[in-house]
Structure formats: structure tokens, C-alpha cells
Image 1 (cartoon, rainbow, N blue to C red):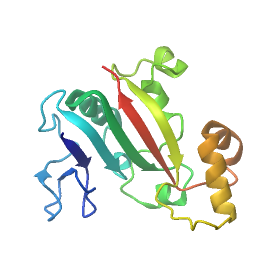
Image 2 (cartoon, rainbow, N blue to C red):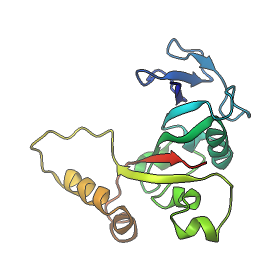
Image 3 (cartoon, rainbow, N blue to C red):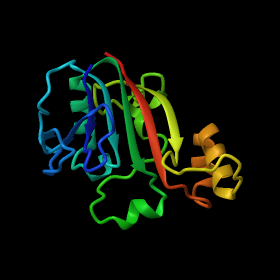
Image 4 (spheres, helix red, strand yellow):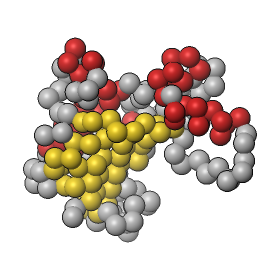
Length: 180
């Protein structure tokens, strides 16, 4: 089973092969993710983890097309990005792309955006959208942020349309499934 952590940096996910352009100890394969094709065979990858990387890419749709090419049917793809309304999304001068909850719907055949706007032939099922995954909440803490995250995770589209401009959260994690 081949599992990739694309853009792993120093925080490679355990059990994954780390891919990054940087010459770090945790990097197993050095490759620039803005350079195509990636050094993997078609339909060879079973799972991809890409955390806080896609916002730095020159062409995120081309990256998704490459992820699609190298992944097997039904492969799990997890992509974490800063939420477009987040303070963290806009302070980093290396961020080139911004993401909201609807972004991956353009590639999900179960969503109207996919058939209405055919930007790419790749197809993903959006299995889950999760806000602020990396925030650790104590078991019995009930602060405003935790309540907002619970609401946003249960109703992500409602949160984005009605509340996100008033109470912005920090990050989004998309769990996708390749459809071939």
C-alpha cells in the first residue's frame, strides 16, 4: 500500500512516504510539486495526505489532476488548507490560492457545480469538510470557538454563507475519494 504525504516538510505523517522539494530528514522523495508529472505511476497510490500545501501551489487544478492521475480508484485524499476568511490565509506572502467550502464541489459529480462548470475531467467525492481540525479542544471545554467549530462542521455551507464573515475560522480539511 503506497501512501504519500505531499509537501511533508518536517512533519511527515506516520506510515506515509514524504515528498517535498526541501532536503529534510523526513523527506523520502525530493520533488517540486509545481513540476509535472510527479514521479509516480498512474493508478498506483492508495492514499494522499496534503496538509497546508495546496495554497502555495502555482496551479492547484493541475496539482489535483496529477493527484488524480497517480491515485487508484477510491483512493482517499485528505487536503488541509487555510480557510479563505482566516487571518492565517492572508498574512503569509507565499499563499497564492484561497479556499472555501464549495471549492472541491466543482470536481464532485454529486454537486451541480461539477456538471455546470467543467473545469477539469477529474472527479472526487467530497466525503467530509472539517473546520479547524488541528485545534485541540479539551474534552469538557465549551468556549465560543469550540461551539462555532461544532456548528460549522455540522452545517459547513450555512456557516460559510451566514456566519463566516462575522466569526471566521482558521482552516478547512477536505476528505475526498477518487472516482475513476
